Amino acid sequence: MAAGKLLATAGLGAALVAGGFLAVAEKGRSALRSDVEAFFQSAAAGKFDEAYAATSKSFQGKNPRENFESLLKNGGFTGFKEIEWKQVGFDESGGVASGTVITKEGSRFEFDLNLEKSDGKWRLREIVADGRDSASVSSGNGNAP
Image (tube, rainbow, N blue to C red):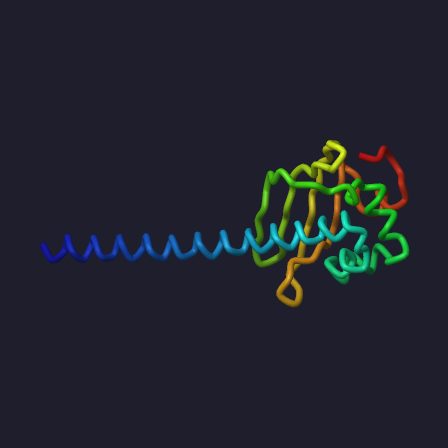
């Protein structure tokens, strides 16, 4: 009888720990989604300095501020209305987010983002819009979404 209570208590404790880990993971995914949505909203509102501030130092090293506005325009980011999420996840090396952006005009384009955590915020490290990385998007190479 005591062994049964011990096993039940251990099982309940394991379930609570697992539930705690799941809650922490969901909170992290929610923060990542929120930071990505803030980036898209800044771009759509024409707040390009604010959107640029939401990118990582490594992104900024590869994509100077003077090219950033064309990256957002050529990538379709300035017409943002909503996101259909496909994947949001993170680990100790960074985060990923992918989905479909739906623009105010009804256009849709796929995106993949690699992110890193810095100063308590998720910052964009790499943007891939409709299969084109940030360098080709900012230069206007390829078809605009």
